[in-house]
Length: 101
Image (cartoon, rainbow, N blue to C red; front, side):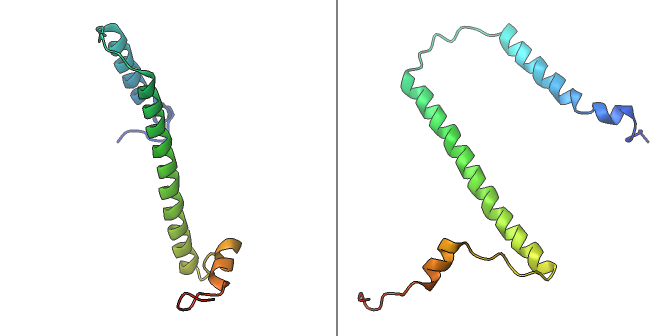
């Protein structure tokens, strides 16, 4: 059985870094000219995709975090998360009836 607490366990992160470095090195060494043109709109489009992906990931993580946190609170007998002030104001506002206030 390998020693997982010793010095070798702390060096496990170096293997993926070595492999990534080797792949990047090979891309640079064996690169061939593409003779392609990227107009300025392409860079803007790629930037938009990256920003959208980051914002989407933050939204998904936040929504799952709130669900997990509420479940953990109920599991330990704590009260669920209190709504924000804006959410509470919207819930307590007078509702329209038949299109009239």
